Amino acid sequence: MIDRMTRPYLLVIASLLLGGVVLTALNMLFVGWSVYALGHIGSIFAFILIAAAYRSRMDGWAWVGLAVLIFGLMTALPQTFLIWSAYTTRMTGGEMLIPAAEPPFGVVAEWVTWLGLAWYALAARGVHALPAGVAWIFVAASITGMWAVLNIFSPLAWLGAVLFVAIGLVWIANDLVALGRNEPDAETELATA
Image (cartoon, rainbow, N blue to C red; front, side, top):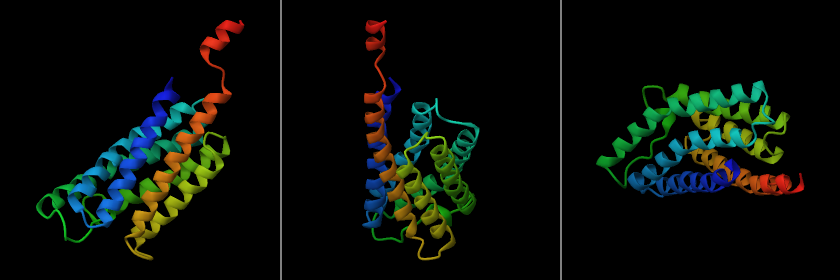
């Protein structure tokens, strides 16, 4: 049941994250950030649904990594809404803002989010609660997000990090379909019993 609900939800959230980041990068600031903000809020619930779908395989470290990730996403909400409110006054043609550059928690929230994502991905990969490829995509997203926080290449590396997260969500949605085919349905179990 939860797999049937999770798959379309993950695809919608991945679309919102990807669409929001692309529109913002194309300097459609207000529309793009509005779409991204919906995706950011939805990603909090998406990761909870992913853990629920794989709950039988999750161990303590994976749950702690998930908790750190959710805490990071939630502490990034004030920056998300602050950027959104800044874009209401200049909808296009302005400077693109990223969450790490915004008060009150900017850098800390981004660090916690990206470290939490890497922790969750590696811990869940270790107990097969995530497909191995997805875990490495999430680790790549974390590394790219940390580069954006540190301004190593460009703050715009944040766009790549969100792109990696969206790709990982789509991959998990696809994996849930395969996982659902491998597990017998409740009606089938009753008929064979």
